[in-house]
Length: 226
Length: 268
Image 1 (spheres, chains in turn purple, red):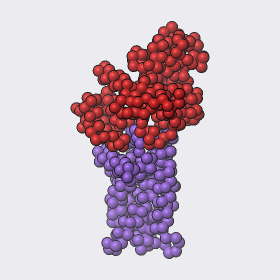
Image 2 (tube, rainbow over the protein chains, first blue to last red):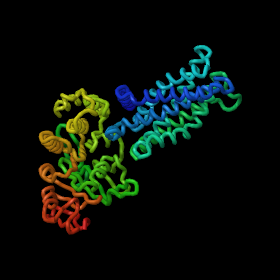
Image 3 (spheres, chains in turn cyan, brown):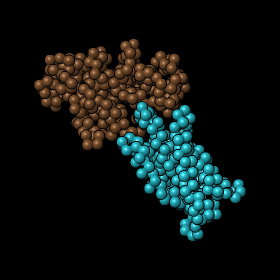
């Protein structure tokens, strides 16, 4: 119970900072919309069903926007070394990780809530009914959980060094490639354009989510103290 | 006398501490390729103030961060509260740290910061508000930390470090940025914390302040303990005839002028 209360306290703190600074999600959403607009424009005349392309387009926006979010939320910790005060408090490292993961997930969901409809409209990809929309939303949420888990760990690991955001993008993109591919296939399936055969994409996404979360849970304290 | 047998009972905080709160043996820290601390031996007693002196770059900040377990030693042994140091919640929760930076969230107000850390430390309700009053922060309690003057931000940082009545208070140049009245207040506060049974270590450059506040002083030079002993003896040595200048003895062989000092041969 203590860990849960601490986690929620840290999430509340992060969201309050985000609400005040408006640095992360606003910039990330602008970048995401720009990415979707450019890709949709570039792919607009391409072959194949729009549903087959929309997953890849919105995922590109999630990735670019996500890197920005991860960097910003961690920058708030490193500014004035506030993170050291958290690390010195008797809060379980797992709660510190869970707090930052949940914050990043909330901000990613806010990003997706704007970028995904924009992508659907610009790609002229319709969603047939409330059931399909809910299925699409669920697929996106599952994918973003894994992205948030991996991005939280990596941003924590890189924040203390001199590499910063550039290195974060370089690491997040390849590390999350399997997740992105699986989630894209899942979105395509929801849009009725998924490939036949192969393992169920949703199960792969969930497995990667669990892998990233457990790894982050175990390593976050170590990387922050390194 | 074993550590367990020699318990110092504190004041209001009811600190149960061994006589020696911090014991470092051969402590070394590497930051990248650079050896920042090397073979540091240090004992910090409960209920007293130890001054950590030395020139810029001597390793004071790194040593304090290592004692707070914010930096991982590359060699040596560190004991905190009579047991091998481990970054577990029960140990961390007994340490207060005042750093070079304020260690507060600049987009949160003073009160929001203090309430956050009070809750993370599980302190009693109202503790943050009480400290805000006590520290003279009431006028800026609703201001974001990022807009405060250096002095007020430093007061807020001190309040954050004292929220949970730490048994070990580590303060890295805590007087920096404070006006005379605030510095006097902080000095009195450190004395009170020590009188309540806690161990206090502060770093700085002001020999007069070290002499006035601390019982013991440790001089670091190039990551090693150059001298350790009674604060008055050590500060006299630093200020006196051995030609202490920019952290170096003029003749390269500092000689301790009193029996309480040690480490001169190491520094040679």
